[in-house]
Length: 151
Figure: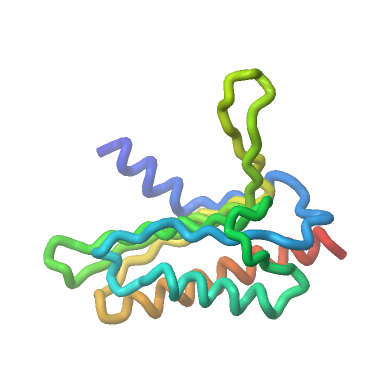
Protein backbone atom coordinates (compact mmCIF):
# COMPACT_ATOMS: atom_id res chain seq x y z
CA UNK A 1 0.00 0.00 0.00
CA UNK A 2 2.86 2.37 0.81
CA UNK A 3 4.34 1.78 -2.65
CA UNK A 4 0.99 2.63 -4.28
CA UNK A 5 0.79 5.84 -2.23
CA UNK A 6 4.24 6.89 -3.43
CA UNK A 7 3.27 6.27 -7.05
CA UNK A 8 0.03 8.25 -6.70
CA UNK A 9 1.79 11.16 -4.97
CA UNK A 10 4.51 11.21 -7.63
CA UNK A 11 1.86 11.54 -10.33
CA UNK A 12 0.70 14.78 -8.72
CA UNK A 13 4.17 16.31 -8.87
CA UNK A 14 5.21 18.09 -12.02
CA UNK A 15 8.82 18.17 -13.12
CA UNK A 16 9.62 20.28 -16.17
CA UNK A 17 12.54 20.86 -18.51
CA UNK A 18 15.71 18.95 -17.89
CA UNK A 19 17.48 20.73 -20.76
CA UNK A 20 16.93 23.73 -22.98
CA UNK A 21 14.86 23.12 -26.08
CA UNK A 22 16.74 25.93 -27.83
CA UNK A 23 17.44 25.22 -31.50
CA UNK A 24 14.86 22.40 -31.70
CA UNK A 25 12.68 23.37 -34.67
CA UNK A 26 11.16 20.06 -35.71
CA UNK A 27 10.02 17.00 -33.74
CA UNK A 28 8.41 13.63 -34.23
CA UNK A 29 5.33 12.37 -32.39
CA UNK A 30 4.82 9.02 -30.72
CA UNK A 31 1.67 8.16 -28.75
CA UNK A 32 1.84 5.04 -26.58
CA UNK A 33 -0.60 2.19 -27.18
CA UNK A 34 -3.94 2.35 -25.34
CA UNK A 35 -5.67 -0.83 -24.22
CA UNK A 36 -9.13 -1.82 -25.40
CA UNK A 37 -10.48 -0.68 -22.03
CA UNK A 38 -9.44 2.94 -22.45
CA UNK A 39 -12.72 4.64 -21.46
CA UNK A 40 -13.35 5.88 -25.03
CA UNK A 41 -9.97 7.66 -25.25
CA UNK A 42 -8.28 6.72 -28.52
CA UNK A 43 -4.78 7.08 -29.86
CA UNK A 44 -6.26 8.96 -32.82
CA UNK A 45 -7.97 11.55 -30.58
CA UNK A 46 -4.70 12.15 -28.71
CA UNK A 47 -2.74 12.51 -31.96
CA UNK A 48 -5.33 14.85 -33.50
CA UNK A 49 -5.44 17.10 -30.43
CA UNK A 50 -1.65 17.25 -30.21
CA UNK A 51 -1.16 17.90 -33.93
CA UNK A 52 -3.79 20.65 -33.88
CA UNK A 53 -2.08 22.53 -31.05
CA UNK A 54 1.39 22.07 -32.55
CA UNK A 55 0.16 23.25 -35.97
CA UNK A 56 -0.66 26.62 -34.40
CA UNK A 57 2.92 27.03 -33.12
CA UNK A 58 6.27 27.68 -34.82
CA UNK A 59 7.37 24.16 -33.84
CA UNK A 60 7.13 21.86 -36.85
CA UNK A 61 5.98 18.26 -36.68
CA UNK A 62 7.76 15.67 -38.81
CA UNK A 63 5.75 13.10 -40.77
CA UNK A 64 8.38 10.55 -39.75
CA UNK A 65 7.40 9.13 -36.33
CA UNK A 66 11.01 8.09 -35.77
CA UNK A 67 12.27 11.65 -36.17
CA UNK A 68 14.61 12.76 -33.39
CA UNK A 69 13.86 14.36 -31.02
CA UNK A 70 10.27 13.23 -30.56
CA UNK A 71 7.33 14.09 -28.35
CA UNK A 72 6.37 10.92 -26.50
CA UNK A 73 2.88 10.87 -25.00
CA UNK A 74 2.02 8.09 -22.59
CA UNK A 75 -1.67 8.05 -21.72
CA UNK A 76 -2.45 5.85 -18.72
CA UNK A 77 -6.15 4.98 -18.59
CA UNK A 78 -7.78 2.45 -16.27
CA UNK A 79 -11.39 1.42 -16.33
CA UNK A 80 -12.92 0.42 -13.00
CA UNK A 81 -14.30 -3.04 -12.34
CA UNK A 82 -17.85 -1.77 -12.56
CA UNK A 83 -16.93 -0.02 -15.86
CA UNK A 84 -18.60 3.24 -14.71
CA UNK A 85 -15.48 4.92 -13.31
CA UNK A 86 -12.34 5.77 -15.23
CA UNK A 87 -8.99 6.93 -13.88
CA UNK A 88 -6.17 8.32 -15.95
CA UNK A 89 -2.80 10.00 -15.97
CA UNK A 90 -0.71 11.58 -18.67
CA UNK A 91 3.06 11.58 -19.13
CA UNK A 92 4.71 13.76 -21.76
CA UNK A 93 8.39 13.68 -22.78
CA UNK A 94 10.39 15.45 -25.42
CA UNK A 95 13.34 13.14 -25.80
CA UNK A 96 16.04 11.91 -28.08
CA UNK A 97 17.26 8.31 -28.01
CA UNK A 98 20.86 7.40 -28.66
CA UNK A 99 23.26 4.49 -28.41
CA UNK A 100 25.40 4.59 -25.29
CA UNK A 101 29.10 5.00 -25.94
CA UNK A 102 30.18 2.21 -23.60
CA UNK A 103 30.26 -0.45 -26.33
CA UNK A 104 27.27 -2.30 -24.84
CA UNK A 105 24.77 -1.56 -27.65
CA UNK A 106 22.40 -0.24 -25.00
CA UNK A 107 20.22 2.77 -25.78
CA UNK A 108 19.57 5.78 -23.59
CA UNK A 109 17.31 8.81 -23.70
CA UNK A 110 18.22 12.48 -23.45
CA UNK A 111 15.23 14.27 -21.92
CA UNK A 112 14.52 17.85 -23.00
CA UNK A 113 11.09 18.12 -21.38
CA UNK A 114 9.11 15.99 -18.93
CA UNK A 115 5.73 16.48 -17.32
CA UNK A 116 3.47 14.02 -15.52
CA UNK A 117 1.11 16.29 -13.63
CA UNK A 118 -2.30 15.11 -14.80
CA UNK A 119 -4.39 12.64 -12.81
CA UNK A 120 -8.11 12.30 -13.54
CA UNK A 121 -11.03 10.35 -12.18
CA UNK A 122 -14.50 10.56 -13.67
CA UNK A 123 -17.55 8.69 -14.81
CA UNK A 124 -17.03 6.89 -18.11
CA UNK A 125 -19.45 9.09 -20.05
CA UNK A 126 -17.49 12.29 -19.26
CA UNK A 127 -13.97 10.92 -18.97
CA UNK A 128 -12.82 11.35 -22.59
CA UNK A 129 -13.75 15.04 -22.59
CA UNK A 130 -11.87 15.66 -19.34
CA UNK A 131 -8.86 13.67 -20.54
CA UNK A 132 -8.60 15.51 -23.87
CA UNK A 133 -9.02 18.86 -22.09
CA UNK A 134 -6.15 17.95 -19.75
CA UNK A 135 -4.04 16.85 -22.73
CA UNK A 136 -4.68 20.19 -24.45
CA UNK A 137 -3.54 22.06 -21.34
CA UNK A 138 -0.35 20.01 -21.03
CA UNK A 139 0.55 20.34 -24.73
CA UNK A 140 -0.02 24.11 -24.47
CA UNK A 141 2.36 24.23 -21.49
CA UNK A 142 4.94 22.36 -23.56
CA UNK A 143 4.57 24.77 -26.50
CA UNK A 144 4.87 27.80 -24.20
CA UNK A 145 8.05 26.44 -22.65
CA UNK A 146 9.46 25.57 -26.07
CA UNK A 147 8.62 29.11 -27.27
CA UNK A 148 10.38 30.67 -24.28
CA UNK A 149 13.50 28.59 -24.98
CA UNK A 150 13.46 29.66 -28.64
CA UNK A 151 12.95 33.44 -28.40
